[in-house]
Length: 200
Image (cartoon, rainbow, N blue to C red):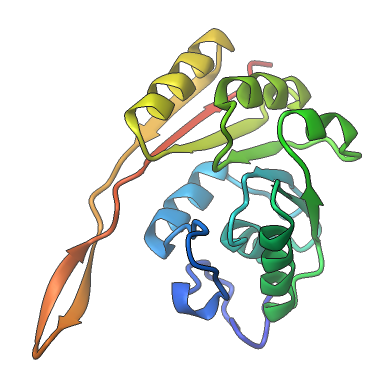
């Protein structure tokens, strides 16, 4: 599925095409591409994106899964509306935005996921535990960690849940930027991407 704003089947929408709000996290393009590759989406996947922020993952996943369903979960009403506006910008119709606090709101979701993306949440261990219980065998979870505490908590949770095929990726990304009259490379903030599968 494509849109007028992004007429390509390849993921990797430039960051500046998304509407954003100051202080609201935006998964930058290079990180987003890694995250999407770890999700291993199918055309009919049901994806829960917990802590969806600006909505970059729901938009990209919605375009990649035309027969699928994306559930974007965000606690803040203003941010949830931002996700809706970004979905409208890219003409994505298969994203449902839920205003709620994970993990409590997960019990009310109608469609169970085969893929889960965790991009935030204060109670990360509880979110991992609860979300995992809704995954079918061979379902995948992908979580991001921007600090040491979350990296430890997520990796410990994957071990306790007996996830298989666990992967941890942290790559260095630099972008060419104009600084005055010269072009220099600026580093993108590093982030860890952890993924694992549920045993059959």
